[in-house]
Length: 269
Image (cartoon, rainbow, N blue to C red; front, side, top):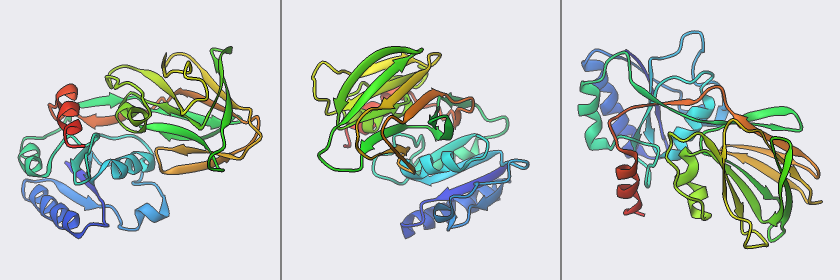
């Protein structure tokens, strides 16, 4: 199996662990390549889409996994080894990874995770695995949002910001903002207002077959942040269109029960 390893390089202990894991994978017959250490700064494709790896192994935290998914020109099977704080997206703990890979072979069983595609004023700007965040550039200033669902006005409200999350991202910022935890097998958009002016503005879970358009009505500079990695500035009356991405992320099925994993990790927060 051809394996590409992506490592959070800020931590020398994580790098040492990744080297040990890479040596182990080589010994059991896999071909292992490490991504360049400057990849995070260059923001270039993770690999040549005409010759993709069979598997991408990420050693790090959720941020490294999100960046890896962003930099894949096409989605290939991905698994994370948790070396971060909590690691909601990582299905392997460091002490379990060696044993797991001993029994892994092609074809790799995967669980697709829905992503959302985002466009600003008709121009595609990226896909999100966790969430898209719309916030003001000016602290302590509220934004005014107009929401269309399937072309029909669904809501108009003022808030500090707006999160459009995937079910995978429901355990991230959306959960901190008061949104529900959503089974990742559900395909929908979770829309969570941030500190809305009216308490009646509650989170919405919208089926992914619907089209969602957000219009920014406030005369204030704002920005769209995709998975905490990509930032785009948006202006007054800009429209942000949200649809289900045709390329879901492909997480390797490590035999983890989603609800057991979430319960376990939440107890460590």
